[in-house]
Image (tube, rainbow, N blue to C red):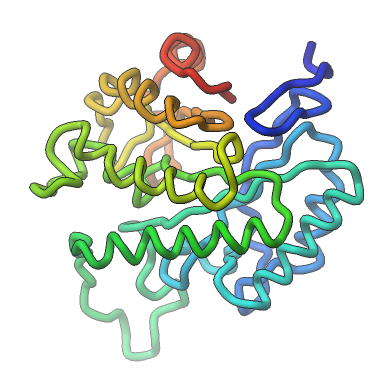
Length: 277
């Protein structure tokens, strides 16, 4: 069964092995993927589908030093090389696009000799910022398409920007992007529609994590709303929905109160109209 073909959106995979995204921190000084990155993915082309590491779509959307990005010509050329190598080895690869949002370090390098700077307080995105965010992802989708990627995975999990919009515990907005679940879903729905307009229906997947801890605290409401979120988002002709769970806090320590794999799988299968990973 595992080695049998699978229809996933617009693609037919030769087997059901999907390589999950794993951030390797192997970019060069300009955040472009290096030869080591190309070799890494080429070696794993036997999977039915590779989901790439998180790729930043703008300079301040990366969460770590040395993470890869796709907003500059050098970065775009580097990813095109990765895709060519994967395809030459018989593989398929999805580009995982993200914006880390609030957890982004203001200065990811070491503090200067005069000590740490004043605290930087995150601010709520203004309407113009939301429009700029959507535009940045739309530009990235065009680059991804030109580079030859087979799919896009939209990273909306683990406390990043879009996950925080979904959660009532972190979304305190009173405009059309906050309040009710319908309002909190709006940004992601608009973004998915724009991505699909660029790459086509059945070529956009979505990553969610209902059990992730955000800001050091569990969010039971996110788990309770997960079935409705799945139903609303998976109805948008997604290629697949990628659901993760965690038993660690948002600093990677210890064991949190996450949903069991079995519970995640049952809920996803019952509520999701798209294939699930």
